[in-house]
Amino acid sequence: MISSTNGASMRKTGLSLAVTLCILLLIPLASAVPSGLTYLDSTWSSNDANDGDLVALNPNGTILASYHGKDILLFNTSTLEEIGKISFDQDVAGMEFNPNGSVLAINKRSTTQIRESIKLIDIDTLEVMDSGVLADDRFRDISWSIDGMVISAHGYEGEVVEQYRYPDLTIKNTLHGVHVVDVTCIDYRSDGEYIVTGDESGRWAIWNMQGQKQGSYIEYGEGLHDCKFTPNGLDIVLVGEDGTITSRTFDGLEKHVDIVEGANEILFSSSGTRMHVSVDSDTFKGMITYDYGNFNELQRTNFFHKVVDVALIEDEYSRIQKLFVAGGTGEVAVYMRDIVANGLNEPGSDLDGDSIPDNIDDDDDGDGIIDDWDDDIGCDAPEGTPCSRYPDLSKFNNIVLTSRNAVDHFFRIAEEMRFKVPDQTKYFCQSEAVAFYLQKYVVYRKRKIYVGNNNFNDLESTFQKFIGEKYLVPTSDSLNPGIVNTLNSFEISWDRVQLYKTVVSNLSDLSDVYYDLLVFFSPTGIDSLFKNFPDFEQNKTLIAVYGKTTLEAAKNKNLKVDIEVPNEESPSMALGIENYINN
Image (cartoon, rainbow, N blue to C red):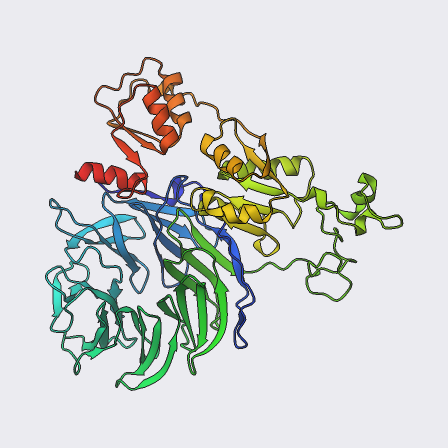
């Protein structure tokens, strides 16, 4: 099944501002400085999306395509408004715009019934074209020829690269005799005369457009993650799985070498003077920018979240203006030039150390209360010291955030009370998705944010560092007992505040609508079902639940649960449903 919607019917989903816990930090390298880019925004796919590992930009940088759990979403890169959506029944492994941006090629999973994986999407109409061909349906690095008349991908039969004619996708050439394992990278030279291919064993080779290998293949010494021609076509740059980055002339002579643990993908500025390398390792997650001429590191952009795929927009001086990063979640993080606070880094005394001099700063002591109100409210300052010059540490809070709703309502209440949340506030987020969303309200460079892996157990040692401090937990009228037990086990001082209530929507208009599968993500969903339909009988309806508390609520209502996630085989609901159907 394939469905699509165009921009006229789409709501503005782009500005959900999910937080990435990202900011540029000063890197301890004499040759590298922060890039000046920081997280400022993000696209958003849906409230429950967990996947998001592909991004692609059209050539003029006006449309961003991102993939989330069988949906390809198109966004306006200026406004981040969703302008289109194309849905597939199968997972998508790779996608790439053609050179003029009119067509998006995708490589999706094939089925026994539909023996094709590469499909073409007309961007103007958002219609999937009739032509299709079966390639290796796990292959990510689809590559278009410079004239847009040929598409290359890992072939279906054996470890070969196949070139398909556009638009009918018939086979033009098969590049064989080199690769004996999975191909990992393909790239066309800017003059359209040659193509480079590499594989996970480390073999790489150059071919002409007739499919003839140019010389012998070369062993890189480690499996290849990426291979690219430089924009002028004179050099080839290779990235290995052990982090070795090597530039070679077209004739094969080695020029420069660097080793960066976790190096994954190469992107060049259009001028070819700068080379950007995406990195995902235990010690650094972000992008490193090099002067390509000498491989000197120029700057780094830190992400502090997983880096799966990257796309960028630059200016005429080869400086990155926008950076789009897929991190495996329902959002694509957007980095742009930072908005500098008024007075930042100007000379003058600075009591609270926020780099804004006191004669400009409206909160000299940084306690979250503006100076005009500080003295009226009062404090425990020594005699002769105004409250505006004496931060009241008792007002500093540690906020424990369990959901995006908790984030929204905490800052809503703060705004209604005209309370400025102190810069020194620490935030403890249950998941990366919650942390992403937090930067809708805060700037990371002034905040301390700690992130769990969908639970707070990962943060026990961090909680223990601040054992003597108080924690506030904003919640709805329902709080998972597991969170209560976890926080109590830490033996910290915490208080729950109910800021919002979950209410049941009126679904009576669906009384005559029947579904094969009902999916529940929380116990309140189960409650909603029976409040709207007290006589509900399951019969042959399948039930899918997410989480133990939802499972328990379903069993309490005597529902037979057919799909339960997360588990090792099905970490997300989408995978759980797919595995159930396949089995």
